[in-house]
Length: 352
Image (cartoon, rainbow, N blue to C red):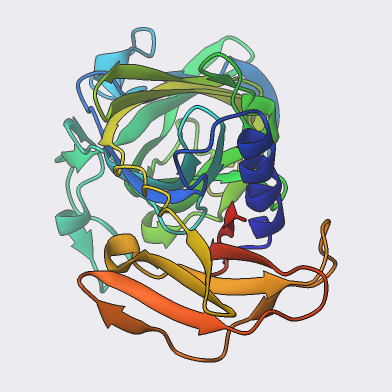
Protein backbone atom coordinates (compact mmCIF):
# COMPACT_ATOMS: atom_id res chain seq x y z
CA UNK A 1 0.00 0.00 0.00
CA UNK A 2 0.94 3.62 -0.28
CA UNK A 3 2.29 5.79 2.51
CA UNK A 4 -1.20 7.19 3.08
CA UNK A 5 -2.65 3.76 3.92
CA UNK A 6 -2.95 4.69 7.60
CA UNK A 7 -5.26 7.59 6.77
CA UNK A 8 -7.46 5.33 4.63
CA UNK A 9 -7.89 3.13 7.71
CA UNK A 10 -8.69 6.12 9.92
CA UNK A 11 -11.31 7.32 7.42
CA UNK A 12 -12.85 3.85 7.34
CA UNK A 13 -13.00 3.65 11.12
CA UNK A 14 -14.61 7.10 11.38
CA UNK A 15 -17.27 6.02 8.93
CA UNK A 16 -17.95 2.79 10.80
CA UNK A 17 -18.29 4.64 14.12
CA UNK A 18 -20.75 7.05 12.48
CA UNK A 19 -23.14 4.16 11.85
CA UNK A 20 -22.19 3.20 8.28
CA UNK A 21 -21.32 -0.44 8.86
CA UNK A 22 -22.59 -2.39 5.86
CA UNK A 23 -19.59 -1.67 3.64
CA UNK A 24 -15.87 -2.23 4.03
CA UNK A 25 -14.62 1.38 3.73
CA UNK A 26 -11.38 1.12 1.81
CA UNK A 27 -9.88 2.85 -1.20
CA UNK A 28 -10.20 1.24 -4.61
CA UNK A 29 -7.94 1.72 -7.62
CA UNK A 30 -10.20 3.57 -10.07
CA UNK A 31 -9.35 4.28 -13.71
CA UNK A 32 -10.98 7.42 -15.11
CA UNK A 33 -11.43 7.65 -18.89
CA UNK A 34 -10.85 11.19 -20.14
CA UNK A 35 -13.55 12.82 -22.27
CA UNK A 36 -11.42 14.44 -24.98
CA UNK A 37 -14.34 16.50 -26.25
CA UNK A 38 -14.43 18.40 -22.93
CA UNK A 39 -10.81 18.18 -21.75
CA UNK A 40 -8.05 20.53 -22.83
CA UNK A 41 -4.95 22.48 -21.91
CA UNK A 42 -4.24 26.04 -23.06
CA UNK A 43 -1.03 28.09 -22.95
CA UNK A 44 -0.92 31.82 -22.38
CA UNK A 45 2.38 33.61 -23.00
CA UNK A 46 2.00 37.40 -22.97
CA UNK A 47 4.26 39.74 -24.92
CA UNK A 48 7.41 40.29 -22.89
CA UNK A 49 10.84 41.86 -23.06
CA UNK A 50 13.83 39.54 -23.33
CA UNK A 51 17.52 39.94 -23.91
CA UNK A 52 18.72 38.04 -26.99
CA UNK A 53 22.48 37.36 -27.24
CA UNK A 54 24.28 39.55 -29.82
CA UNK A 55 21.09 41.50 -30.49
CA UNK A 56 19.98 43.13 -27.27
CA UNK A 57 16.59 43.62 -25.68
CA UNK A 58 13.63 42.68 -27.83
CA UNK A 59 9.91 42.24 -27.25
CA UNK A 60 8.88 38.64 -27.91
CA UNK A 61 5.39 37.82 -29.15
CA UNK A 62 3.86 34.41 -29.82
CA UNK A 63 1.55 34.36 -32.81
CA UNK A 64 -0.33 31.87 -34.95
CA UNK A 65 1.92 29.50 -36.83
CA UNK A 66 0.20 30.17 -40.13
CA UNK A 67 -0.14 33.96 -39.81
CA UNK A 68 1.05 36.97 -37.86
CA UNK A 69 -2.31 37.36 -36.13
CA UNK A 70 -3.04 36.85 -32.46
CA UNK A 71 -2.19 33.44 -31.02
CA UNK A 72 -5.44 31.46 -31.13
CA UNK A 73 -6.64 28.05 -29.98
CA UNK A 74 -6.68 26.76 -33.54
CA UNK A 75 -3.22 28.22 -34.19
CA UNK A 76 -1.39 26.02 -31.66
CA UNK A 77 -2.36 27.55 -28.33
CA UNK A 78 -4.85 24.85 -27.20
CA UNK A 79 -4.76 21.07 -27.26
CA UNK A 80 -7.41 18.52 -26.36
CA UNK A 81 -6.51 15.90 -23.75
CA UNK A 82 -7.13 12.17 -23.98
CA UNK A 83 -6.24 8.96 -22.15
CA UNK A 84 -6.90 7.95 -18.56
CA UNK A 85 -5.91 8.88 -15.03
CA UNK A 86 -5.56 6.53 -12.07
CA UNK A 87 -6.60 7.26 -8.51
CA UNK A 88 -7.06 5.62 -5.18
CA UNK A 89 -10.65 6.57 -4.48
CA UNK A 90 -12.99 6.15 -1.51
CA UNK A 91 -16.41 7.02 -2.88
CA UNK A 92 -17.49 10.47 -1.74
CA UNK A 93 -14.81 10.53 0.97
CA UNK A 94 -11.26 10.92 -0.35
CA UNK A 95 -9.03 10.65 -3.43
CA UNK A 96 -5.33 10.22 -4.20
CA UNK A 97 -4.00 10.89 -7.69
CA UNK A 98 -1.43 8.22 -8.56
CA UNK A 99 1.40 10.29 -10.00
CA UNK A 100 3.45 8.45 -12.61
CA UNK A 101 0.66 5.96 -13.38
CA UNK A 102 -1.58 8.11 -15.59
CA UNK A 103 -1.79 8.14 -19.36
CA UNK A 104 -2.85 11.75 -20.04
CA UNK A 105 -1.79 12.94 -23.49
CA UNK A 106 -2.25 16.13 -25.47
CA UNK A 107 -3.86 15.35 -28.83
CA UNK A 108 -1.71 16.28 -31.82
CA UNK A 109 -4.44 17.77 -34.00
CA UNK A 110 -2.91 21.05 -35.24
CA UNK A 111 -0.53 21.13 -38.19
CA UNK A 112 2.51 23.12 -37.06
CA UNK A 113 5.96 23.98 -38.30
CA UNK A 114 8.61 22.60 -38.19
CA UNK A 115 8.11 19.14 -39.65
CA UNK A 116 10.50 16.59 -38.05
CA UNK A 117 10.59 14.70 -41.35
CA UNK A 118 12.24 17.74 -42.99
CA UNK A 119 15.32 17.50 -40.75
CA UNK A 120 18.67 17.30 -42.54
CA UNK A 121 21.10 15.24 -40.49
CA UNK A 122 24.09 16.55 -42.43
CA UNK A 123 23.45 20.22 -41.75
CA UNK A 124 21.42 19.67 -38.54
CA UNK A 125 18.74 22.00 -39.77
CA UNK A 126 15.35 21.94 -41.45
CA UNK A 127 15.36 21.81 -45.21
CA UNK A 128 11.89 23.24 -45.90
CA UNK A 129 8.95 25.02 -44.28
CA UNK A 130 6.45 22.16 -44.18
CA UNK A 131 4.34 21.38 -41.10
CA UNK A 132 3.21 18.25 -39.23
CA UNK A 133 0.65 17.41 -36.50
CA UNK A 134 1.61 18.74 -33.06
CA UNK A 135 -0.04 19.40 -29.72
CA UNK A 136 1.03 23.01 -29.12
CA UNK A 137 3.18 25.54 -30.89
CA UNK A 138 3.52 29.01 -32.34
CA UNK A 139 5.36 31.48 -34.50
CA UNK A 140 7.83 33.46 -32.36
CA UNK A 141 8.15 37.09 -33.39
CA UNK A 142 10.37 39.79 -31.96
CA UNK A 143 10.40 43.56 -32.12
CA UNK A 144 13.70 45.44 -32.04
CA UNK A 145 13.20 49.19 -32.01
CA UNK A 146 10.73 49.73 -34.86
CA UNK A 147 11.42 46.47 -36.70
CA UNK A 148 9.34 43.29 -36.14
CA UNK A 149 10.48 39.97 -37.56
CA UNK A 150 10.07 36.21 -37.15
CA UNK A 151 12.61 34.54 -34.86
CA UNK A 152 11.52 30.89 -34.91
CA UNK A 153 8.74 28.37 -35.27
CA UNK A 154 8.16 26.11 -32.25
CA UNK A 155 6.12 22.89 -31.99
CA UNK A 156 5.59 20.70 -28.92
CA UNK A 157 4.89 17.00 -29.46
CA UNK A 158 4.55 13.86 -27.30
CA UNK A 159 3.10 15.98 -24.49
CA UNK A 160 2.07 14.02 -21.39
CA UNK A 161 0.44 15.46 -18.26
CA UNK A 162 0.97 14.27 -14.70
CA UNK A 163 -1.13 14.92 -11.58
CA UNK A 164 -0.34 13.96 -8.01
CA UNK A 165 -1.08 14.75 -4.39
CA UNK A 166 1.32 17.23 -2.78
CA UNK A 167 1.37 15.00 0.31
CA UNK A 168 1.38 11.21 0.46
CA UNK A 169 -2.08 11.16 2.04
CA UNK A 170 -5.46 11.26 0.27
CA UNK A 171 -7.40 14.49 -0.23
CA UNK A 172 -10.75 14.60 1.52
CA UNK A 173 -13.93 15.22 -0.47
CA UNK A 174 -16.72 17.38 0.92
CA UNK A 175 -20.09 17.53 -0.85
CA UNK A 176 -18.46 16.26 -4.02
CA UNK A 177 -15.70 18.90 -4.01
CA UNK A 178 -11.98 18.44 -3.37
CA UNK A 179 -9.31 21.11 -2.96
CA UNK A 180 -7.06 21.32 -6.02
CA UNK A 181 -4.49 23.29 -4.04
CA UNK A 182 -3.55 19.96 -2.49
CA UNK A 183 -2.32 18.65 -5.86
CA UNK A 184 0.48 19.32 -8.29
CA UNK A 185 0.13 19.28 -12.03
CA UNK A 186 2.64 19.56 -14.84
CA UNK A 187 4.26 18.14 -17.94
CA UNK A 188 5.93 14.79 -17.31
CA UNK A 189 7.10 14.32 -20.87
CA UNK A 190 7.32 16.38 -24.07
CA UNK A 191 9.58 17.01 -27.03
CA UNK A 192 10.13 20.27 -28.85
CA UNK A 193 11.04 21.01 -32.45
CA UNK A 194 12.41 24.47 -33.22
CA UNK A 195 13.01 26.00 -36.62
CA UNK A 196 15.28 28.96 -35.91
CA UNK A 197 15.32 31.70 -38.53
CA UNK A 198 18.03 33.98 -39.88
CA UNK A 199 17.22 37.56 -38.89
CA UNK A 200 17.30 40.56 -41.20
CA UNK A 201 20.07 43.19 -41.17
CA UNK A 202 22.66 40.41 -40.86
CA UNK A 203 21.72 39.85 -37.21
CA UNK A 204 22.37 36.13 -37.54
CA UNK A 205 20.27 33.24 -36.19
CA UNK A 206 20.04 33.53 -32.40
CA UNK A 207 17.85 30.43 -31.97
CA UNK A 208 19.26 27.18 -33.38
CA UNK A 209 17.29 24.51 -35.21
CA UNK A 210 16.32 21.69 -32.85
CA UNK A 211 14.68 18.34 -33.54
CA UNK A 212 12.99 16.12 -30.95
CA UNK A 213 14.64 17.76 -27.93
CA UNK A 214 13.32 16.63 -24.55
CA UNK A 215 11.54 19.28 -22.52
CA UNK A 216 12.49 19.24 -18.81
CA UNK A 217 9.69 17.91 -16.63
CA UNK A 218 7.57 20.61 -14.98
CA UNK A 219 5.53 20.00 -11.82
CA UNK A 220 4.04 22.87 -9.82
CA UNK A 221 1.22 23.37 -7.33
CA UNK A 222 -2.16 23.60 -9.01
CA UNK A 223 -4.27 26.44 -7.62
CA UNK A 224 -7.64 25.15 -8.85
CA UNK A 225 -9.92 22.44 -7.49
CA UNK A 226 -12.17 19.68 -8.71
CA UNK A 227 -15.44 17.84 -8.28
CA UNK A 228 -16.79 14.30 -8.43
CA UNK A 229 -20.44 13.91 -9.42
CA UNK A 230 -22.61 10.84 -8.88
CA UNK A 231 -24.07 10.11 -12.32
CA UNK A 232 -26.31 7.33 -11.03
CA UNK A 233 -25.53 3.78 -9.98
CA UNK A 234 -21.76 3.21 -9.90
CA UNK A 235 -21.02 5.88 -12.55
CA UNK A 236 -18.97 8.89 -11.47
CA UNK A 237 -17.72 11.97 -13.33
CA UNK A 238 -14.55 13.76 -12.24
CA UNK A 239 -13.67 17.31 -13.21
CA UNK A 240 -10.22 18.70 -12.48
CA UNK A 241 -9.45 22.34 -13.15
CA UNK A 242 -5.88 23.18 -14.20
CA UNK A 243 -4.59 26.61 -13.24
CA UNK A 244 -0.84 27.19 -13.17
CA UNK A 245 0.71 30.66 -13.18
CA UNK A 246 4.30 31.92 -13.48
CA UNK A 247 5.34 28.97 -15.61
CA UNK A 248 8.81 29.30 -17.17
CA UNK A 249 9.10 27.82 -20.68
CA UNK A 250 12.45 27.46 -22.43
CA UNK A 251 12.31 28.16 -26.16
CA UNK A 252 15.84 26.95 -26.80
CA UNK A 253 17.76 30.01 -25.76
CA UNK A 254 14.90 32.27 -24.71
CA UNK A 255 13.06 31.67 -21.44
CA UNK A 256 9.55 33.11 -21.43
CA UNK A 257 7.04 33.22 -18.59
CA UNK A 258 3.44 32.21 -19.10
CA UNK A 259 0.56 30.32 -17.59
CA UNK A 260 -1.47 27.19 -18.21
CA UNK A 261 -5.17 26.66 -17.71
CA UNK A 262 -7.31 23.75 -18.67
CA UNK A 263 -9.86 21.16 -17.66
CA UNK A 264 -9.97 17.40 -17.32
CA UNK A 265 -13.36 15.71 -17.48
CA UNK A 266 -13.21 11.98 -16.91
CA UNK A 267 -15.69 9.18 -16.28
CA UNK A 268 -15.40 5.99 -14.29
CA UNK A 269 -17.46 3.10 -12.99
CA UNK A 270 -16.41 2.49 -9.41
CA UNK A 271 -16.28 -1.07 -8.06
CA UNK A 272 -19.14 -2.49 -6.05
CA UNK A 273 -18.52 -2.10 -2.32
CA UNK A 274 -17.36 -5.25 -0.58
CA UNK A 275 -20.19 -6.53 1.66
CA UNK A 276 -19.12 -6.98 5.26
CA UNK A 277 -19.46 -10.65 6.22
CA UNK A 278 -21.55 -11.61 9.23
CA UNK A 279 -19.47 -13.07 12.06
CA UNK A 280 -21.38 -15.55 14.19
CA UNK A 281 -20.13 -16.63 17.66
CA UNK A 282 -21.83 -19.30 19.77
CA UNK A 283 -20.84 -21.18 22.91
CA UNK A 284 -21.48 -24.89 22.50
CA UNK A 285 -20.33 -27.83 24.64
CA UNK A 286 -17.71 -25.78 26.49
CA UNK A 287 -16.15 -24.46 23.26
CA UNK A 288 -16.69 -21.30 21.28
CA UNK A 289 -18.01 -21.94 17.76
CA UNK A 290 -17.04 -19.18 15.30
CA UNK A 291 -18.37 -19.02 11.72
CA UNK A 292 -18.57 -16.68 8.71
CA UNK A 293 -19.45 -17.13 5.01
CA UNK A 294 -16.85 -18.44 2.58
CA UNK A 295 -17.86 -15.86 -0.06
CA UNK A 296 -16.39 -13.10 2.12
CA UNK A 297 -13.12 -13.26 0.19
CA UNK A 298 -9.84 -12.56 1.96
CA UNK A 299 -11.18 -11.53 5.38
CA UNK A 300 -9.12 -12.98 8.25
CA UNK A 301 -10.15 -13.83 11.78
CA UNK A 302 -8.33 -12.16 14.68
CA UNK A 303 -8.84 -12.09 18.46
CA UNK A 304 -8.05 -9.85 21.42
CA UNK A 305 -8.38 -10.24 25.18
CA UNK A 306 -9.72 -6.73 25.90
CA UNK A 307 -11.31 -3.70 24.26
CA UNK A 308 -10.10 -1.24 23.20
CA UNK A 309 -7.49 -3.65 21.92
CA UNK A 310 -3.83 -2.67 21.83
CA UNK A 311 -3.01 -5.77 19.79
CA UNK A 312 -5.11 -8.08 17.70
CA UNK A 313 -3.75 -11.59 17.18
CA UNK A 314 -4.42 -13.86 14.21
CA UNK A 315 -6.15 -17.19 14.70
CA UNK A 316 -3.47 -19.60 13.50
CA UNK A 317 -5.71 -22.66 13.26
CA UNK A 318 -7.18 -22.88 9.75
CA UNK A 319 -10.99 -23.05 9.60
CA UNK A 320 -12.97 -25.94 8.19
CA UNK A 321 -15.60 -25.46 5.50
CA UNK A 322 -19.14 -26.75 5.83
CA UNK A 323 -22.02 -25.80 3.52
CA UNK A 324 -20.43 -22.55 2.36
CA UNK A 325 -19.43 -21.47 5.85
CA UNK A 326 -16.01 -21.19 7.48
CA UNK A 327 -16.15 -22.81 10.93
CA UNK A 328 -13.65 -22.73 13.78
CA UNK A 329 -13.74 -23.74 17.45
CA UNK A 330 -11.78 -22.19 20.28
CA UNK A 331 -11.56 -22.89 23.98
CA UNK A 332 -12.77 -20.08 26.31
CA UNK A 333 -9.74 -18.36 27.85
CA UNK A 334 -9.83 -15.82 30.71
CA UNK A 335 -12.80 -13.57 31.38
CA UNK A 336 -13.53 -12.69 27.74
CA UNK A 337 -12.30 -12.96 24.20
CA UNK A 338 -13.14 -10.60 21.35
CA UNK A 339 -13.10 -11.60 17.69
CA UNK A 340 -13.07 -9.63 14.44
CA UNK A 341 -12.82 -10.18 10.71
CA UNK A 342 -10.34 -7.90 8.98
CA UNK A 343 -9.51 -7.31 5.35
CA UNK A 344 -5.69 -7.66 5.05
CA UNK A 345 -3.85 -4.29 5.00
CA UNK A 346 -7.08 -2.42 4.35
CA UNK A 347 -8.64 -1.62 7.75
CA UNK A 348 -10.94 -3.09 10.37
CA UNK A 349 -14.04 -5.16 9.70
CA UNK A 350 -16.72 -6.54 11.99
CA UNK A 351 -15.92 -6.94 15.69
CA UNK A 352 -17.76 -9.06 18.23
